[in-house]
Image 1: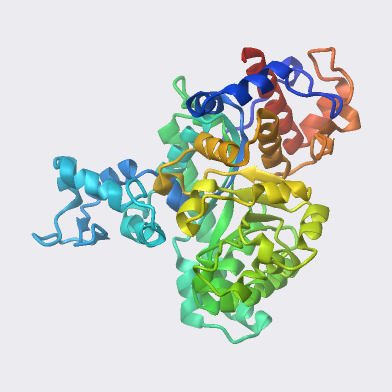
Image 2: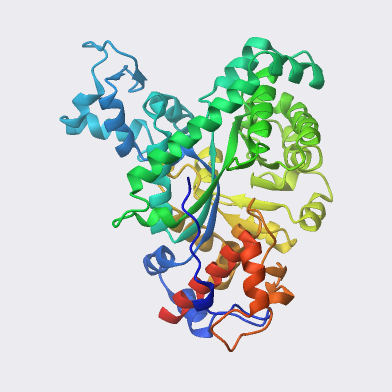
Length: 485
């Protein structure tokens, strides 16, 4: 089980009373004057709140997966993709790479974007190392949480398929009859409840292994033990309708199970491969949300350009995700200028978070620009994520740096995005902020700026609201960080 969030509220400095509280002018001026290397050093130490929509499959570095594959006795085919034993001269064992530096380096290149920039390489990399990840969820979670702690992240939402694609396979086998109720009933009658139960058991085992590897509860516990995390059920949109529906049904059921650490679902995939089915997928989410209304929805949408699809197919993905699919967060949203007129106003009014990963946009779309400034001008909240960090050979601080350099952002802008990441996380409890645009605290915590202890009313509020407590901790970390700079 996840380690409990330790917040020593009585010792934590009080947060700002109103929007008038800003970082000291010195830190704003200094950050603006830094060269890129100095900014990176600064950002490596900066508190970052949450890292959202982190897909587990792309977040682990190849250096970890090569030993896993070697221990499993897996082989390498001509493309350096993993294959099952027996190995041969044409398909040598992966373990040979551990004593062959040239082969080892070639594997790092084949399984990541280390020396590549093209979209095709990015897509192919995931299939090459997939066998290494099977049965390694606990180790993968441990690596992600440990790295998150070093990045000064307090909370993660990790997208994972705990059934290792069993729901997808079930959906392919049963198919799609164009009727939501009938298809769901067919799934229920053919093993979906057992799949959900076994998935939750598998996650408990993975979490136990994760805690074991991190040494949680012991004298030498890894800092990752203090990073709080929850999960999103990862749904691949690049599958036939029956398979997509089965994954969604499994995800909604898992997230609505009492005691589950899943808060929602994340629909991901290469949209150019599923544009004809996208509206149907959103209707599937709409139906399942009526069955499980408490489940949160995140959708990676609008990750398209005219290099990938005709202009008319750029015009509806973000809109459909929000209007039909009830998405509360959108990943990337790069094609927003082609979307429906008035959508920006809807995103702003509904406070739909746009979670941007610059490195992914550069790799998947081949663009050096992101839509962040456009969203911000329209009052749409934005955060930065470190998605697919292992494949992209990146880290969260570098994503912040890339965002700052591309958009000429200052420290106050990046701090706002870090706060947004917790404000729009799928966490239980109310927010610390009465006004999350200006970051004005709720009435219970509005007083006490001159004191170093929370008032009794504020202390009670923080104990009752997990999100507010974590936001309080972030404010304390910002204050300590800003004092050092």
